Image 1: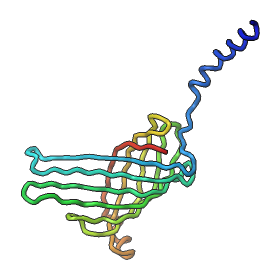
Image 2 (image 1 turned 90 degrees about the vertical axis):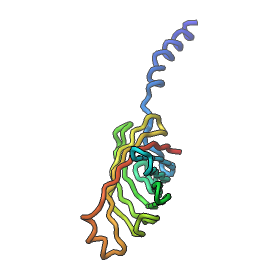
Image 3 (image 1 turned 135 degrees about the vertical axis):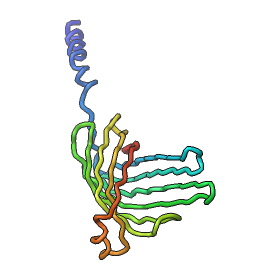
Image 4 (image 1 turned 180 degrees about the horizontal axis):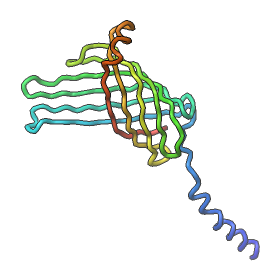
Length: 175
């Protein structure tokens, strides 16, 4: 009986350390990731409506290095001119830093833009963001990208200063 009592006391004493053990917020090498972002806007008469979304898929080369592909889609619906679709497909690499649940990252992307309202051209630029894990595999992501457009390598250097900033907020999941 005394042995049972001692074992019970030890089990109760160590239970909080098991329950509150620090989770591993780093995805493992080879683990994959999916993110989804969306936004929309309309004028006050709902004559012009825009919906933007992006999704990405990536794979961790290391617990901190993610390589992947990102797809952007923009749908613009105007009362007198119909619906236009614009898109962009880009490959990216992001390097993550460890701050427990918060994982800031920096990276680069290279893509191609196309669509009804867009000039078909290449795009590239740096990106930075923050993933905040609300669960060990699920996070909220905020990201900013600087993108400049070019048709060939000679034009890339000239157009770097004429880029645009793109912001996104969404959710993601590691699997």
